[in-house]
Length: 400
Image (cartoon, rainbow, N blue to C red; front, side):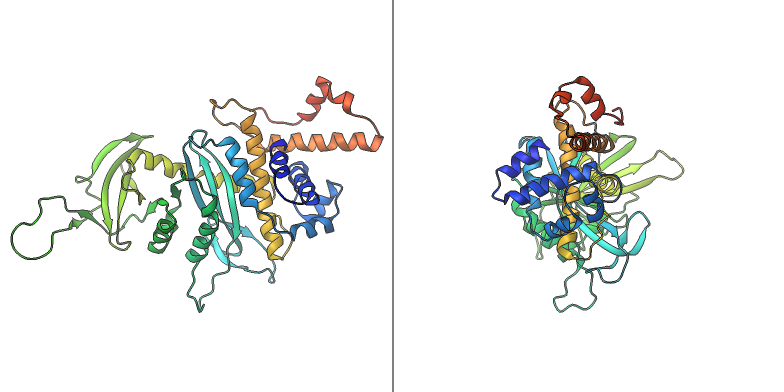
């Protein structure tokens, strides 16, 4: 927590808010059970009303996350921007923007809330860190401005854009964002999209023959529709992880743009070969890099998993929009802090190995020991110098 404290000390925020945030992050990691106002108060010296009041205060979580990430992600290290929505179960009828959203785990739309999140992935250690989270407004069929969910996601991108560095040029998304409006919106902020196409995407080969020199009429631009069962006109690249990669620069009819397309052919089951179509609006991106960048997109799913299991992403018991926004971002920022602490404790040239369960065990033990000393009125300074104290703090941690 020293890094977060150092950053907050350099910010022009009030001392009570700085103290509250540090207490909040450590308490989320120390508590057992749901992360709500009542349970937070049980594991700290602040009341549930204090937590609720502080959650009403605005705070620049994007700026804090950016400062935290910059400590473990040097500017010269390759990175990837990733975006994805996340379903949040929510009961009741009075919560703002409660609607039917797609629940990926169940494969259907369910009633609840949704947040959209941007993360940065360290491509060396294959670890993702959240940059920003925002609740998705409920989709309304008849709106005067004809706004859609894609418009809401692009609004979020415009808020995050000023916090991105010049080196962060590629944004990875899953297949639901293979839409013209999304690609155009991402391009407008200076980013390239990496994603996945439908297996029956209507695409055309670009004409590369000699130009027309005689007769009237415009030059030939395209050279026939792509048949995905015939890859003879594609360039074979290599085999990666048992998958064959083919690539070509093609024109997408519906998107009205040229894309770098990588066909990932899976022949591991000879009786039932399968394929997937990956793409990038950056036509100069090589096929192998595109393949591995799309694989690293999945790091954001690990962020959602860990935040739900360990920092209480889905535990908010409030209906206030500001408090919900504060809760979602606080839980994801706490996860960032836990992962960054473990990253800094390991050699930079070693693969990233972390356990959020071990981090929580450490913070719980530390909080329990401090409470123990406080109740008995002991001065724990001499005990902390003992090697046995470190053993007590590490009690219950998992071996890496």
